[in-house]
Figure 1 (cartoon, rainbow, N blue to C red):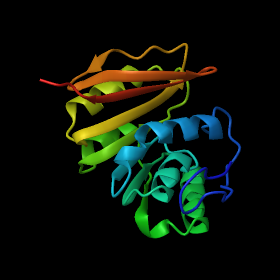
Figure 2 (cartoon, rainbow, N blue to C red):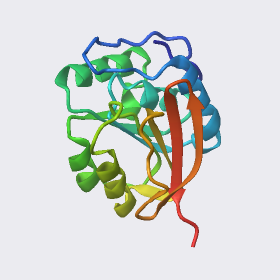
Figure 3 (cartoon, rainbow, N blue to C red):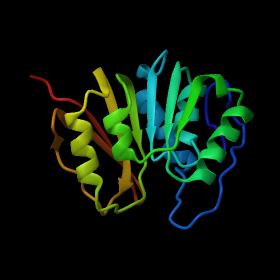
Figure 4 (cartoon, one colour):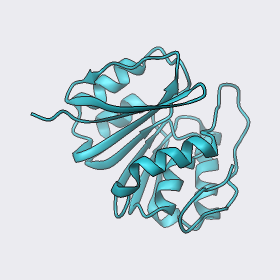
Length: 182
C-alpha cells in the first residue's frame, strides 16, 4: 500500500498481516480524499480504527495540520509509528492505544475530519456512531467519513450527525456525515 497524494505520495507503507485486518484500497482512499480535499488544509484529523494509519497519514500528506490515530492493537500501533517516521510526518501524528469508545469520551476536539474504517459488519457500529453524534469531537462544519461494507447500512442520523452523501466502490461504501442543519 502506498500514499496516493501529497508530499509523501508514492511512499510504501508497512501493512502487517492480521486476520480481519482489511486496509483501505488505493482506489477507495483516492476517492475519499477527492471528496474531502477542500477540508484538508490545516485540518485536525481523528483516525479511528487506524490500522496501519494509512488514512490519517494520507490526510497529513495532503495538508492536514495534525492527526490523532486510535488503535487498540499494539503491533498496529507500532506500524503506524513506523509509517509516520517513514513518511517523515511523525511530528504531526500522535498514536493513541485506546478503544474507540474510550477515545470518543476522553479525547479533546474539535476535529475537522473524523475518519472511521472499522472491521466490516462490526455489530457495535451504530453505538459508536451514536457516541460520536453525542460528542463534541466534530468541529463546526466538520465531516465524518465512514468506510463500511455495502451489507451494513448505517442510519440516516446519529445524534447531531446527519448523512449527506454516500458512494459505493465494489463491496465498499463511503458514507459521509456532518452536523444536521438547524
